[in-house]
Amino acid sequence: MKTLFDKDTWQEIFSSIGQNKVRTIITVIGVLWGIFLYIVLSGAAKGVDNGFERQFERISSNSLFVWGEVTSVPYDGFKTGRSINFKLSDVAALKNRIPEIQHIAPRNSSGVFGGSKAQLVNGQKKGSYNIYGDFPILTTITTKNIFEGGRFINESDIQNKRKVCVIGERTLQELFEEGETPIGKFVRINGIYFKIIGVNKFVDGGGPGDDGDIFLPFTTYQRLYNTGEYVDFLLVAAYPEADIVKVEADIRAVLKELHHISPIDKRALGGFNIGKMFKQITQFASGMTFLSMVIGLATIIGGIIGIGNILLISVKERTKEIGIRRAIGATPKEIRTQIMLESVFLTVIAGIIGIILGALVLSAINMATKNMTDLPFTNPTVPIPYILGALFLMVFLGTLIGLIPAHRAMSINPIDALREE
Image (cartoon, rainbow, N blue to C red; front, side, top):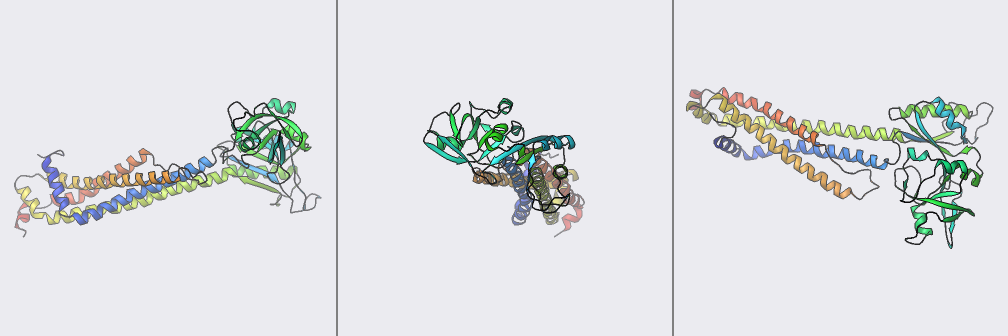
């Protein structure tokens, strides 16, 4: 009795395949193309997902910005055209009334959304830069990459209204000599001396700003620009499980109530919902992955059905041969095993080639986009379990489809086969 590892069994399989070379190659390409599409499309979807995660890795993915603008609807005795200015007291009100909020970072700025930039002077060198007034809680929402030896603003700076600042990487390059350490040194900001406590390396994905930004303690900024209790904008992070769209709606409702804004006024408050956009991107990537699975599976099934058809034709063409083998003692099980092995072998070979080609294409795409930091696309990969799962499915389907020609071969009557011309 022949087994899977018999040399004769595989010689007969290769002989059968060789008799239908063109048809076999075309059908194998169909299966190969299916797994290839699945690998490439799934990898591309993961690349998009990874790219946007990289773009937003420095800021909470369930966060939003909100700021005041100008009213467009008269309300509660106020005319249209009234400027809305947030206050520090709004922070406590929002935290108390919206339990889904995890952190709120009130921020003031100049030069970012208008206003004059800060004038920095270090000896004979000077420059103009955006300036922020911040609380330490900012770093719980958006990461600041402070160079070794420095630090960001802390609570003691806030309480004591210290004249300290964190400068940007570009500011360091423009105002200091190469290799010079700025930590502990003083620069003049708008004519007032400030001690440098850190240097921030700007990285895209942490909200508005650039590599020349200056950060001051919020309370120090208040005194420098005489802003009082006013706040330019709020950076809000919700808990990971919270619905950020609902949180934004609740924030707007509370702020409209606090600042006497009409509930139907859509222009009085500006905002940018990072969490909502991140969720849409994630859904888009998931949709691409699902689409790749559908397209790949449909193509694979089509190719495997083609393999079944080839084997049916092969069985018909080899009716006499099968009859002779049956007449000299080949059992129905041996005939069935050979036909099913042909089906599985062709399926596995097509799958492996498709996986290799897909991996090569993804590798080439990864190398081509590796240094494109502005492109929301990086590291297009497909998890190994997904690949093995697809290959297992192909083997399973190949086995099933092989049962049809195998059953046809087993049903051949040796006497009738030998009479066939």
